[in-house]
Image (cartoon, rainbow, N blue to C red; front, side):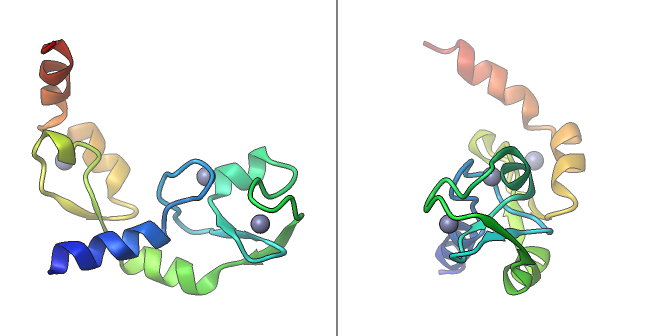
Length: 108
Ligand SMILES: [Zn+2]
Ligand SMILES: [Zn+2]
Ligand SMILES: [Zn+2]
């Protein structure tokens, strides 16, 4: 199913350290682990293997990230939007399913 196919690919784009989706520039340690830009900036060494980070980027994964459609952050509330990586933040601010999050948190 298309849904499963997407999920498999999205796992590849999850930062192994903070589990948010990696968007270009995607950084790498010298072993080859890919991490997101903010983890790269926060850490001195790769959290997975303690190697130093290299200056190279994971160009092939960046290519995938650019083509990938991501689920809305409020998908749990019922939003079915699929978004390009650079549309996610803008959509998140205006997503009409945002309000439902509060409803769910009130329910015991
Ligand atoms: Zn990260
Ligand atoms: Zn590593
Ligand atoms: Zn949405």
